[in-house]
Image (cartoon, rainbow, N blue to C red; front, side, top):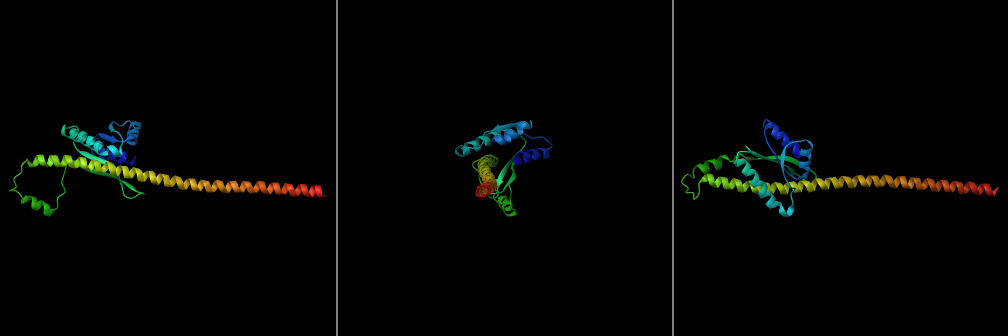
Length: 196
């Protein structure tokens, strides 16, 4: 739910113009319940994760290239530790490489390099490949976050069950002692009655 809420806030930042693409059943159910239009893909399957990532990449890149999407941001749960996740947003397109001053000056000095392909084609291919790799990585991180959330939920449930078990045991022993005490009092009362 936090992922979908942050994705919706990203759309709101963009003046409400944006389209939702959801991977998984929970986000799909949440958006259906709130009557928000979206495109959905099935949940992440560990054995098919790479193929699913490439399928999503191909869909997203084709939508950007045909002009249906003006840009691409992915919102996903990022695992910080076994007990904590944080929702992160990664901007994919338009692609803006992060260059340090040193690498920017070095790239300017390579103007005499002969390229077999046009630099534009090389960059497009690298960005296309990079998007697939990042989606594959995000799928893995999302699965880790899911497992961590399940672990935390199971741990909390285990603690609640232990507390309930302790309370039930106390109630059981209290009721058992009350029955034993009542029976002993009735026995002593009967003995004193027949002894006289």
